[in-house]
Image (tube, rainbow, N blue to C red):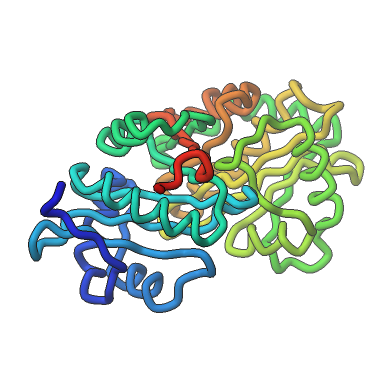
Length: 307
């Protein structure tokens, strides 16, 4: 470890760091050099990016930024050669303590083996677990939901959709449903969205489409889809308390997936807290395939700051 040095990342490091971030996520996401350059050139307050070298070769990196929704929390992500994780972690810990952060958090999938092994050995605690799941929209079949759609239609319930910029859309009612559902939904820092106002809510779904189940002018459920290239992401779904367990969320999401399929999207993804069993069941019925769990590791800075 003595031959490994750490330093603030520079623009020259961007291509190598982008490659390491992409490889460390098992290519689930692609990080570009341009993204790295933006992080280096204009970091968010409290954020920093470190690189680690063995000799002249860049072998690992660490990105850090304030963790939304966790006061005093700093999110750290380690990438690259696990042999460099300890010096990177110690450098980040020193800086986090100096900047007043009180907790480090790292979110990794359970099959990101080098990171999981290091965080466990470094006495981080596995505080929260989340799930992710994917659906091949080219194989999605709406036929099993025709009967459910007809039953709701005969009862006076229809599924409508609108774009975030649509005028006359029932934004206040949708946001009120969101706020009510948040009170009943198991949450953790990784799966919780900080949408304290209607404006925050509309900003989060600004690039997507919203589907609502409406009965006699009242909204029973909604599902918000994010649109990204050839994929859609189910950002959040909510059902009115007195209508839960009747299939309205399943139908709303099924209609949303049918729309996405007909619009040419080929993949869908979703996720949430492992304790949110109702949504787990909904997505299982729709054909989503779960991936390895996401683990949120936590460590208090005050108890571990280097002397």
